[in-house]
Image 1 (spheres, one colour):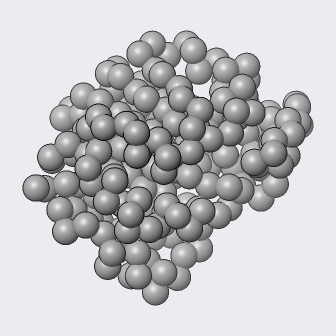
Image 2 (spheres, rainbow, N blue to C red; image 1 turned 90 degrees about the vertical axis):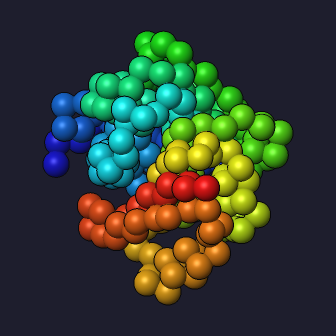
Length: 207
C-alpha cells in the first residue's frame, strides 16, 4: 500500500496520532486504526446510505474526529444544514482544523467536550445523531450504558435517526446484550462485518 507518514501529533487521550498520505489523500490514524478519511469514512458512509437524508434538518456528531463525516454529509449525501460536532480530544480538533480544513464547511460548530457530559447540559433535539466514539480500537464502556442511551433518546427528534458505530469485532452476545437495553422508543437494524470488522447500528425513534 502506498503510504507516507507526513506528521505525528501527541495526545494525552489518543497517544500518537499520525497523518499519512494514502490512496492519494491525507488520512488520520491511531496506533491500530484509521480515525478519519479512509476506512472509517467508508464504514460511516455505509450507515448513512440507509438514512433518508432528505428528512434530516439538523445533525449532531458525537466523536467528530477530524471531520470525515462532515465531508461525507456535504459532498456525498448533499446535506447542507447545521452540524454540531463534539470531540473530547483538543489535539484531534487541532488536526481537523490544520490538516483537514474543517472550517471550509459552513454551518459547522465544534465543541470540545466529553459526549456523555455534553448531553447532560445540552437540551436540543436533532434529526440525526452520529455516534463514533473510539479510543484507538475501543468504544469506552460508558457509551453502551442505559443511562447514556436514555440521554440519546431524549436528544433525538421523533422519527429521527441515530447511526452508532458500535465497535470492532464485537461478538454476537455483546451485540445482543447491548440492543436488549435500548429504549423501547427505538427500532433498529444491525449491520455486522462492515468492512470485515465493524458493527453499525442504525436506529429510528418512532415515538
